[in-house]
Length: 482
Image: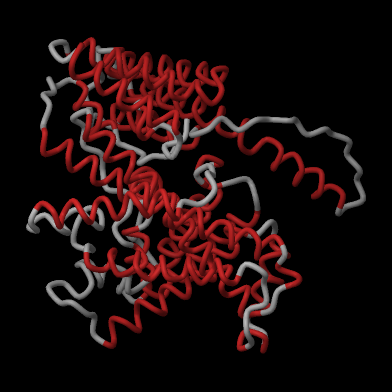
């Protein structure tokens, strides 16, 4: 079920009404409703894959119970690895089986060995990369004794399947989200209003920004061989805003919808395109995944402790694994490695934690140096996104090669130029609003709160009108494929 669909517009009020007006006096009934609603929400796409969520839930709940009962370190490690193997096994089969098989066959063909093997027609379950990491955080933290194993199977099931963030995050830690299912929840009007405001902004990002950018980016990337450099540069720029509007828009809607039910989810995007270096960008982009890899992979590998080689090795591992997490294609691996190269100079010069505060904090405009740093970081990010969007490595290299050719300085040459101009105007308005609201959890979190009611509501209605007026063709969220 898509957030930007009529189905969800009907589904959400029904669940909200049942949650607060029918089940409000019973925490157990509220949690049961969340589980049922979450399974319905996921099953709307394909009910057959509900069995994966149920099985993963049962395995990790059982592992947690067994970890409670055992102090034997060898047995505890076996239990932990049972959870990891089961979860990553499902993820590996559905997401990477054909990739490894195809590359295995291709590798042997280089040595003159022709291996006959058939790939499988595998449907990738929506959200499997997200909920497997979320449930793994539970068993890892229980194993580390950072979290007490739960005895409440309903609460744990609700934690694993919580519908607002089930299929595209944020990837919540068990230490943060699971305890919220134990506590009695009362309706908070101000929290609900704030949630609706964040949902509104998330829909604007998705429907107005991402979907309109997608039309142009797809046309240019799909016909890149016929485009000149300036057109390709526009295509990369539009995709850069498409993926941000699409993914951060989903996170905004998920976080806002969670607030309607009395839950607080972690911030997943913190205005990443205003970053002054790549390290800051990765502290602000897909925060739930970046911190997951930091805490469960990077630090256990040694982090930044040790010699230069250890730092370099761990940096490349975390970025390449992060890239591979996104999809079974060499383009994602190269995208990850490229970001590691961007990050490396900052790490080796101990400047990777230089920019921790909000850019131009307390000022309307950035300094010249800040503005230049933002533009350079943004430009490097745009180039990296080309690998993320391209069909294969060759496509990406040809795209970049032509983009930086002399034709970069000629006029764009594609048919939808007039539509692109409208989208550029929308992007300029969007960037200005994001800049003004960069100190908040989301852009319009504080904008207009001190205005008189007619002006404040005029802003909300203007955003709503833009969603209906400029809304592009309904498209699935990009991260559904991950």
